[in-house]
Length: 133
Image (cartoon, rainbow, N blue to C red; front, side):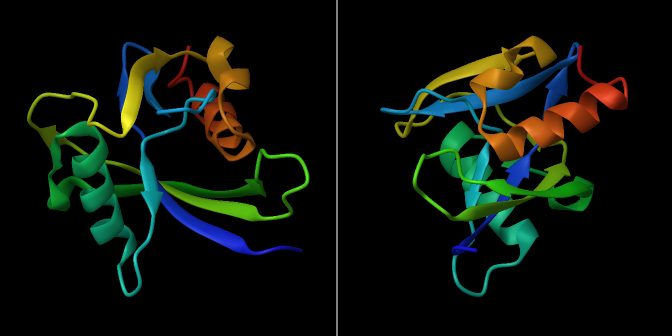
């Protein structure tokens, strides 16, 4: 098994859809979040990454763990695994894509294949829980 990529992600749902982001130069959408810096907790990483990508502030007291997933990275020939700890949280501010984000989209279960393998696991659980249409 290759190296583990340790990430956190913010599941933000509205009208049965989950917010997705697509980075510049990438094809796939992902649940917003990112990699942990040395010594950061999940919560610290989540707050920093969401603010960097979406220009909103998560309310720390509202952060709740949803589920943690692991799956192979989506690049052929790359044997790394992605661990994604998913959280829900309330926010303040107006959602907007930062300079590193090309596009934001509200994704339904039909968009599952437009996301990396680890995100697809979250889509499956959200659908099974009746939270994603």
